Amino acid sequence: MSLVEQWIRPQIWALSPYHVPDARGMIKLDAMENPYGLPAELVPAWLDCLRAVPLNRYPDPAAQALKGLLRGILGLPEQMGLILGNGSDELIQIIALAVAGPGRAVVAPSPSFVMYRMIASYVDLSYVGVPLLRTDFGLDEVAMMEAIERHRPAVVFLAYPNNPTGNLWSRRSMERIVERAPGLVVVDEAYAPFASDSFLDRTGEYPNLLVMRTLSKMGLAGLRLGYLVGPDPWLHELEKLRLPYNINALTQASAEFALSHQAVFDRQAAQIREDRAALAAALARLPGIRVFPSEANFILFATPTGTADRVFRCLRDQGVLIKNLSAQPGLADSLRVTVGAPAENQAFVCALRHCLASESHGPA
Image 1 (cartoon, helix red, strand yellow):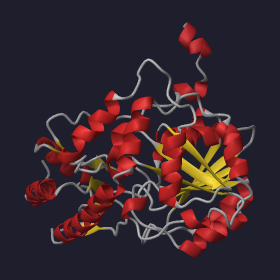
Image 2 (tube, rainbow, N blue to C red):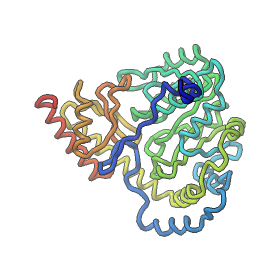
Image 3 (tube, helix red, strand yellow):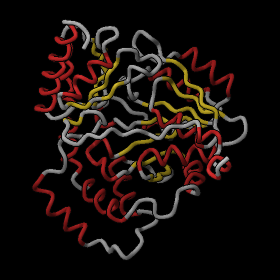
Image 4 (cartoon, rainbow, N blue to C red):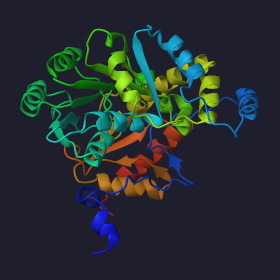
């Protein structure tokens, strides 16, 4: 037995690294990124902000200016806690570390964001995925309640809208889950800029409700900045697990600059919502394609039975990269495409039409 085999935990041996495909030279529609970027007219002022950052000094450990801006934009009352993370992933990890213990569990609908399961396994929490309803990817409230009663989870994660299905769940069902859960309930609103509903204004009503968001989807994926909102007693304890200086100085400066131009990103989000409707309509016109409703910046769709893998490869061969989900439980024949700029969306639809036509003449 090697030293690595001797000391690495068996649970880690059983894992696979999170895979990010090489997208060089591709139309990249696989990762739910905002296609528009920072407007050119704002770039010089942003660079001026970065030039003023003293790279020889550690960043503000509390990111006070950035948190103040966020509080103002979100309208958070003083008694509500706010913690920043190096993306939502770090916040999920902080939550998992805080509640981990022998026999404790995480519950989430399935399919949902893969990092809930992965991070639970990192810290030896049991993970219980509760299948969504097959008809419309709705919450199976009865099954969720049974899982909560049986496993008494330390945390329930509810992605709202859900990734990868894109839908919002019944608000009343979610409220009942929050009311029944014995531990934390984290509502993950990563796609809030594109959704018609939110639980952010409910965080003060429930002692166990936290809301998590990210700046990635609004157009700042490169900054890796997430935030968590909820009752201060919870956030006070979670803060103890946040690594010192986890939000670097360039991220703080860039995020402060971006948030001071929030209207720019609001307009981009509105454009993406408009583009989403146009893309969904175009997909629905293609033969054999089933389009699922989305309140995110991506669309889940099903291809004719047994064709998803070949369609995915065909698209990739034509220089269009999307996400193949067909191997996941409950997502047979399913692919997910990010809403890109209009030209990217048009190129994707043309490529998909070609791939479907190839399928109709027999598998490749």
